[in-house]
Length: 154
Image (cartoon, rainbow, N blue to C red):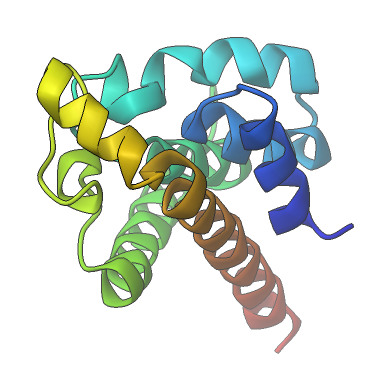
């Protein structure tokens, strides 16, 4: 099973988009799946079901930060690499899906509005669309990790 499939399996087992992406990527970076699930929980539904930045995107960005981010006693170069990878991620995700915003990705519907949630559910968006976003986020992040690795080999 590849990482995109693992993330989709988390999602199918009632974890949100952010949890599914971050818990798939973070263990390879030294953080347990359980801690990853807890950290990412509040980012689901576009941050607490507010439908801002898609949870799959925030899960990926947390993984990017975990891998490249500036920690104690690190140089500012690490912060810059993290920002560059973030912009690259945004550009790639937007090119594929048209947006990084949860509400846009759910066709402008409000998951906090009873009529809209009924439409989201009747169109099975959580089972048809969101797993695609989760898989894409993992694939792009893995690609960014590989590109960075290959840049350092040259």
